[in-house]
Image (cartoon, rainbow, N blue to C red; front, side, top):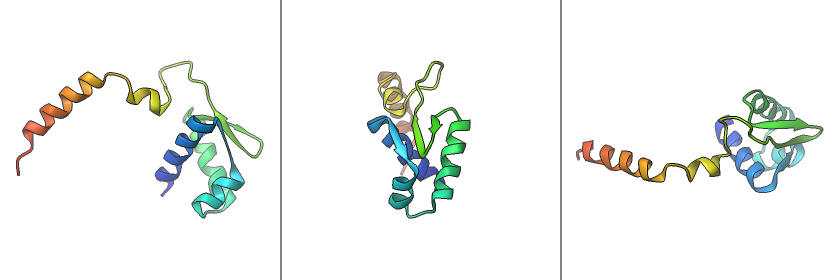
Length: 91
């Protein structure tokens, strides 16, 4: 459940640029303490910056890119990997 919440939080940050503890708590039906714990952990991972009452999207200055940006990188290589893996799968 925590991983799913964190994925949702990342997506919301990419769309809106910020999230707040109270809304996330209601959305995920967990306590505000749980959300604060998630946000603190995500800050330690370098995914966001904690602010009073929530978090904002951390601007990447190193190799950590927002998820949507990473999805668009190296599409041709990813397709070749997927095709090679598909050939190895047998019914």
